[in-house]
Image (cartoon, rainbow, N blue to C red; front, side, top):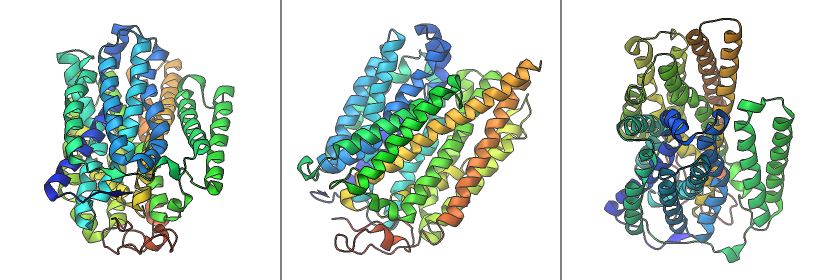
Length: 500
């Protein structure tokens, strides 16, 4: 696959703005509903168990289809898949905003997830083929990473303001004008590309195995909140999903035209970057969601105040991701910057472990909001490593893989942290403890698990990515010598095979 022509700088900057806006919309839609959930429940009559599917249906479609959507981008053309995904996302947002029943909203959220998966899966693939100079690419990845790292915080601010000032319907309706403007700009800014074509081979069996396996895995995990981790449902569905995913990898080793060529996993940068991403995103659920729940259910903040309280985190992440991350990656390498970012994140969550039940914002929460800026370092570095070694014809599927690990991390983080926190709270309530103290103690369990996950990510970065990030991983990443040119050696850690 190759772009017909490399666009000028202004056009590439517009394309980056389009990609970042699309990614931001997808991330926002995963978090913007969190502060509006009570309002949605009371207006549409959701049951307590059914309300979770406002979030779960989006995660199920988004996480399950990313890898398939990324490969379709390589085959059909990434611009075509991006535009189709954005169009579906906007249409589904209109249906969600007009929903009059729980079933209608859940179906619309599933449609948003499908559209979001299509546009997000190819975004990084488009980005790395447009920005080929290492420092320029690092800056672009910083912009893209900001949308992921700060998007959840922005979503909570926006969700709170829109819900309180207008109604919950507007958290979906706002996607319509922004999405239509993004679509119009994308048609002009993103250059047309020629996919390999479906005639080159479509691994239908592999697509069915991985999509079914991922969706079933996410469905299994989100159901543990009610069924428990050791129930027959969880163990049975978990085993089936594992068998489907194992079958997918077996299929990829033998298929003539695999959906995900296994050569991309021979790069330690790709494998390690994705592992760090999964652990880091799972841990950040403790900050993005649990802190917001603590502020509302324990400290008594309303939706708007909760969103505004999270705003310093978004500002801190943005300042680092957009202001200094590219320069630091260019000077010290992606791995070093990743390690520094993870250390700051560990400090941010560790501070929450000392937060009292009746906490005060400035001494107890604001320091965490500042240290969470580590995400502005870690996310661009992880994205650069996760996309390292991608040939242009595989950029879509490598992009889809990176986004898939992000969604799996989010789903597992949400399930594990929320389940264990709820279990701790329920135990204390049965023992007669004050409800606020019981909730606070449960949330502390989530914070502790988040710290443990970040420490695991740090160990992967320190030991698993040793020697990666300064060009040493490039020969692995390039694939077979007879099908790929020698990759550039850079000091940025963003060593991709040359693009046309």
